[in-house]
Amino acid sequence: MVSSGSGLATFGIASSPGIPKDTVATTLVAPLDDEDAVEFLFNEHGEDIAAVVIEPLPANNGLLVQRHEYLAKLRALCDKHGALLIFDEVISGFRFKDGSYGDMSGVTPDITALGKVIGGGLPVGAYGARTEIMESLSPLGPVYQAGTLSGNPLAMAAGIMTLDLLDEQAYDRLEELGQLLQDKVEPVLEKHGNPMRLVRRGSLFWFSPGSDAPPPRADMIPSNAGVLYSDVHRGLLDKGYMLAPSAYEIGFIATVHNEQHILGMVEALDQVLTALEV
Image 1 (tube, rainbow, N blue to C red):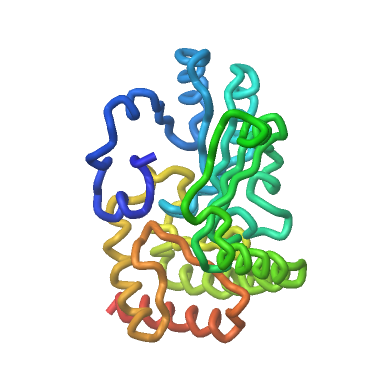
Image 2 (cartoon, rainbow, N blue to C red):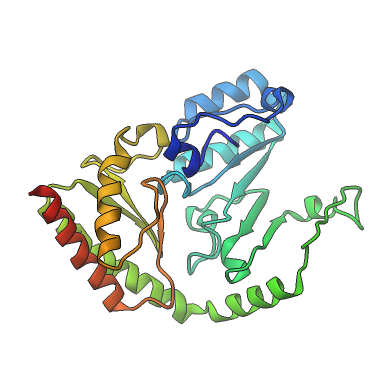
């Protein structure tokens, strides 16, 4: 798990000290969007693979949209070899009107990890799974899970209120603002020779570096991604708009945003890109 993520990508760190060798030895890493690589690993180690863990919509090292065919292949391989398919939807869960990205892709995992949105801004995590898996947890089963802040009343209250507010009207509003961003920012980027490409899924968006099609894998992101982005970030900040501080982080549209926020940011981006061309 330590081999990915925006922090490591930003600072060019391949991994992290402190991870026991035994832990690394029991983990197989496959590139995203590579069905042959995953099939090879299953052919070599299928009997020993307990689970495949993946962000179906990776959103912490760029917004790397994964194909349905790739996710469906993972589902088929897990079923064939008796492994679990685990979707990390801590970022993408509850971002969409139709549910999670797994719901949108039509691929159902055995376990889903959730967080972020369900806490209403407070720290909280959750997971759900098939009935027979959940029944393995105490007090029904032998697996004990708890934590100091598990079921924290403040976080639970904020989460309940957040989920109550996220009705169909809220999701429609988020999609409306996301579409506005896309409609307005794409002509601006084209006007400046597409130094970046906009990737959007619902209220999530990312400025993919370079003029090529947005990549499905982190190793396909241009190595100089941070150079232009840092200038754009600084220019937008000067104009009152703060994007994430890393070229590999994504943006989030919230229900508190309105059309003027979107239009103002797009206008500021146009001005920043114009100034950078001088």
